[in-house]
Amino acid sequence: MGRPANDAGAAAAEAAGARRPTRRFEAKRNAIVRSAIEEMNRKGVRGMTLGDVAARLDLVPTGVIYYFRNKEELAAAAFLKGIETYQGLLGEAGREATADERLAAFLRAWFDHAARVGRGEADVLPVYSDVRALNAPAVNTAYVDMFRGFRRLLPGQETLPRLHRNARAHLLLSQVLWICAWQHQVEPADYPRTAERMIAILTQGLLGRGTSWTTPRPLDLSRDPGAAASAEPFLRAATQLINDEGYHGASVERISARLNVSKGAFYHHNETKDELVVGCFQRTFDLMWGAIHAAEREGGSGRDVLVSAVSALIEHQMSGQAPLLRTSALSAVPEAIRLGLLQRFDRISYRFASILCDGIADGSVAPVDVNIASQTITTAINAAAELHYWTPGLAAQDVIAHYVRPLFEGLVSPAA
Image (cartoon, rainbow, N blue to C red; front, side):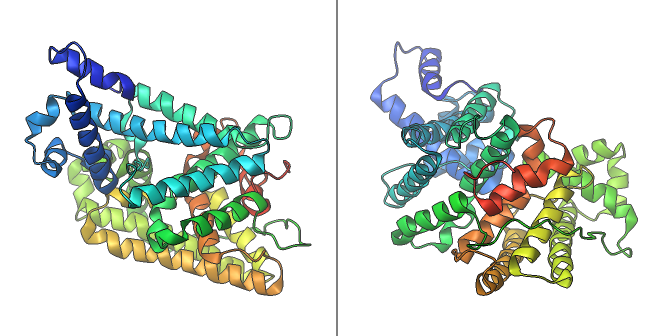
């Protein structure tokens, strides 16, 4: 399970009794991997089935098993294929002399690849939102190597200490991996324009000319005391499992086991798993709107409101008490409830865009593309749920300096 992509085909061919893979074998194998990526992007790793992959190619499931022994091996090959593409883009960008130039070259190359995908000249990249659910050693190793490739785009360790670089690399990686969530709003002919505007945001930050960082004001994010206290443990357990394992990985059995209760106890408090998932999203929406409204009540410039709201939400993510549900969890949620949840996330991004407009008007925010900037903000908030994996030892009180300030000051700015 989880062989490197360039070895898996040869191993499968040997298992079939062939001396070396033929062109026909490789073409069919690559077609199966492409089909798997499409299915994984729609349903997540655990939701993908060999039957669905085979049906896309008018095959029977045994036709897929001839090339891949099981679903996990196929998913590993799909993830590795995407990482290989990313490593190629990173390698080309890494030849540039400065961090600004490296970041710009990579983002231009990414959007160029996206344009080629639209023209049928390149393969769709996998969504990595639940890559940890696969738990394949080869994929985990390759993913960490890809993370290091993103880190090499940033200023060197002589400029940024290790924890600062790791935090920024995670922020950059998350921004890139989540473009797929909003790129459908962009006309493909505008990809070059979009790349330039994203480059400006990630390298130069969001602060207006002549303005500087402002200390975030503490906000009270406590929820409505009328909310059912008995539901909170289930909401927290389900949120943590969905963040780690994806929608399908958070089964009723696993949620119950995490709380050390029976399935009967689960259904005593929850009608269905989907009802609980919707509750997890509602809890996340409540916290995000609560931060926005609390920051606005404090007053100040658009910059002040954004810095306070974003800082409060990211500090909440790092507190370890009750993380927000990652937006990427939506990729595998059943379509019947996905659209409504996506619309609600879009409203939050729309509100951040509105606050950005306020800041541009009062001069505290740079004249950026507010549609893209609002997506970078929501991505940074959601990605903070995984920050501890990449910055071991980072104290919660230091997350603002290492992670939030670079969002506002630019990923190539000096360490705070």
